Length: 258
Ligand code: NAP
Image 1 (tube, protein in one colour):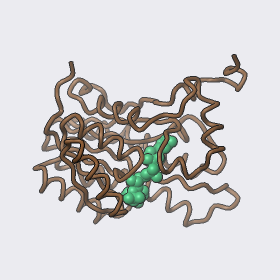
Image 2: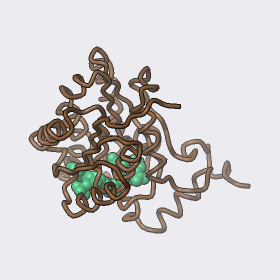
Image 3: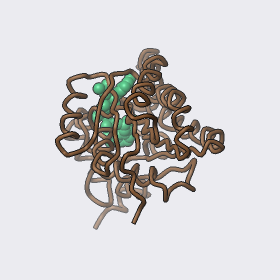
Image 4: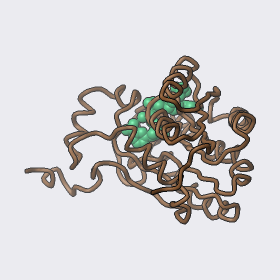
């Protein structure tokens, strides 16, 4: 049995929907106190209501992770409300498509600003509280796209997701002295509102390229994050876990025949 994480204070950025909401639900279900963040107040309220109905302790604070002031406010809210921060799930991210030929400065700044700068800013803001915890955990939501694979339209996105891992490795060394671990989950294609926006054809194409023959669920990612947040994972830092149903394994489509 793993040591209970009941009562621990958890911040989930991008927790209003999708993978972040799934992570929040798993942690709340394990008895943690969860603060979700995002920019959409209706979605945030709905998610908090859902988590509370399930018996979990949850709250929200609005904030844009690409803004330093907002990240500071998110960390301050968690500290005021829960007395500290034990776990930060830096999950907020966007994946708009743009080919290299057509990509604008706005496209690049938007994706890198939320996915990469937002990761760094949210970790920075939570640092004092995570250090005070004595067993601080940072769990980044990266991706297979960028660190391992590529897909047309996502060169900026891939750069942001690979960039998170570059950040993680040095952050893990710097923060080790404070007892904080920093690890990353690398999801394959997970069914979320954001993924659904890419269309049924995209989802069908992806499913057919996955050896386990299904898309991922938000719970698949949530339970991986929960493991990385556990006391028992306390000696793991600066590492990645691919959660993709084997999607990165086939050498070619022929490997999936039969
Ligand atoms: P999603 O359904 O679109 O949800 C994205 C979440 O991020 C929402 O809660 C959104 O909240 C929040 N968010 C976006 N920009 C933000 C900003 N600037 N500041 C604060 N919050 C922001 O996406 P998802 O599929 O769950 O993806 C979540 C993470 O998983 C991302 O980092 C993504 O790169 C990664 N990922 C997803 C997949 C997949 O297949 N779904 C695969 C690999 C990696 P608001 O709308 O309320 O702002």
